[in-house]
Image 1 (cartoon, rainbow, N blue to C red):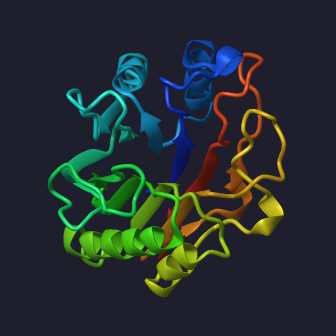
Image 2: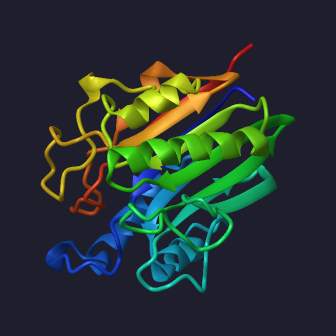
Length: 250
């Protein structure tokens, strides 16, 4: 296996009152985006039930992990899609809290943040993927990063790992530094500009959407891209998706 591709995309909460930027005006553009780039691994955040169901129905070549049909209306899910010939070896859904196996949050977290993890195999190679969405306070983000790394250490010891999502933090944050101290690298740097644009189409916003990697894989530098294109004439979300290809270290 020579390489594989990964993309992370915050969908924008489907119940938000966004007027002309609402879900019904964007869903086909998001679908066009995903089918254009066709990543091996696609991590999406802020997925309401109806948003997840739309992609499950229309991305027929993908399997998925993390869909919670009975999730409360205003609780967001993180869904990992992956396409054949990847096979699912294990998966886990956790809440970023002191009780990760039950619906919960830290007291100083605004929302009940979550993470979906999947252990995938292709042609004898193993890849662990985590899709998450962090809260706003710096101390909560650091706590979430440490929890997630500890969980991944037990979930996929020694295996290559991708951690993808919306971290509500920039690369100079304590959260990003915490991942770096845990052995994770970031394929992107400040030259790439921001990801959160609030439907403006600007490139100078905050880079809060990341793909981080660790162990036995490395990015294809020429493939790194923050996707700022419009699809079907609209911005698919208020966040730009982040795309990168990876190869296996020899």
